[in-house]
Amino acid sequence: MSSASKTRSLSLLTLAVIAALSLWFVSAAILPEMLAEHPITPVRQALLSSAVQVGFVVGALASAILGLPDRLHPGRLFAACAALAALVNAALLVLPIGGTGAILARVATGALLAGVYPVGMKIAVGWGLRDRGFLVGLLVGAVTIGSALPHVIALGGGADWRATVLIASAASLIAASLALAVRLGPYHASSPRFDPAVIRRAWTDRRIRLAYAGYFGHMWELYAMWTWAGAAMAAAFIPVLGDGEGLRLARLVTFAAIALGGFGCIAGGWVADRIGKDTVALVALAVSFASAIAAALCFGGPVWLLAAIFLLWGASIVPDSPQFSALVADFAPPEQAGSLMTLQTAIGFALTFVTVQAAPVVAEHSGWPVLLALLALGPAVGLVAMLRLWRLSRA
Image (cartoon, one colour):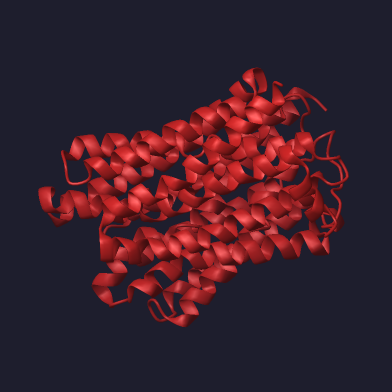
């Protein structure tokens, strides 16, 4: 196929992923307005966000076990899941605020997004071999930018949180139509169904085990930071700037921080194809670790300084993510790569449920600085694992 066809399909796919992933953090972005309208306990506040992770894990495993991307056209599967996710998200408009129905709707949204993100990655890698680091980075970058969108949508919606819900659902419907126009690349191939036997390889192959450890450390902090960065900055900014200005700045910085990570992901993928995936992951983990510690130490200090730290944190927290998956694919036998990456993703997102759920409880009882410092434990563990992998690869 021509380079023009590749560019067109990848452009449409990227836009579709950005639009569909705007559903992920809707509840986190509109939480202040929902709380102003109806009280929600801290546990249920966390469940509104962590429920998406739970749904995603269940959906990803079910999709792999059933072999859905293999038996169905991935573009049509993407479109169907994005459209259904839009409708489920819109149910937040009629369900009791923070109630069990709303939490279950978030679980369903996450399960349906498992038919968007992994399927989109499968389509992307079908368009190249030597540039797969960049292609995976492009998709993860799109996921990141899409995850940032609810915060800027909420800025436009003002106090009307329902407008944010409607706009995000409309974006996902647009994503469904874009996905139908995406063509499959010349290297598109069926992936194997999930094979339980690969679990043994995940723990006996040292290179894969270290790549897994790096990914798990990365996931420890990633979604907790993305979910609660806005709340943390609002807690720091509002006492200085007031309710209105403090909340607006917190949302703007949160959007910019997450979006910067998306662009960093794309750039990191390009660099990884040239200097090594493990090297890019090492640098990203080191900067992310330092940013988390700096945010904890500077919390309550000058607004501009904390905002700058969160921007650096957001830019560095995600460029390593696609490289962990690409490393596993490099080390795994071709017939097991799909299953090993599925297992890696499922365990990683299951871990995020713990950190996202625990974050507001820790912040309420011990303060935001303690929480931010605890998040630094993830990249610290990831750094140790990736240093060992780096040395092993060059031995």
